[in-house]
Image (cartoon, rainbow, N blue to C red; front, side):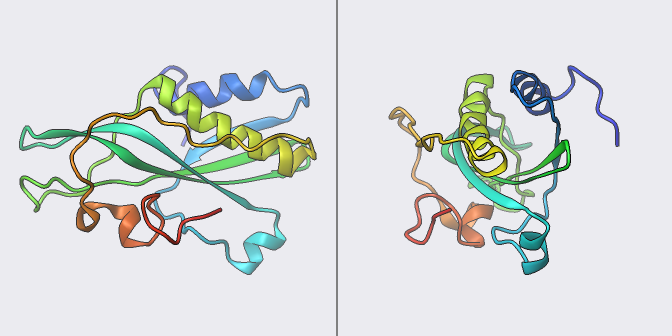
Length: 170
């Protein structure tokens, strides 16, 4: 499906950031809400890599409840083939603690937080696709008071990749 410029901040910001790279390759970002946290052997052979990032986000439920979370998990899969690159993004959802029967909700993430997630991703792309020596971008979120994280309502916790779990890594 073709995307209309200016309609999705994730795609727009990613496109602008990748245009500034010196390599001249064309990179695209697409959403895929079925991405798994681990690559299949065939995907590895095709050159796919994984990058996990975390962000602040705000969730809005149809019951009028909203909340801020520092546990917004972003999973990127990416690869470069010939002069083209593709990034797939899964933004993990959370359920509402007030109505518990609602579907899991996608967060709203500010442009600043999207940029920080892309800093980490682009660092990985430069290192793994272009062989640049770059330092990994660490997750550096300032302290913000949020309600306690409810693992039972977190899609990322359910599959074991939420950042506040002991078994997280990339």
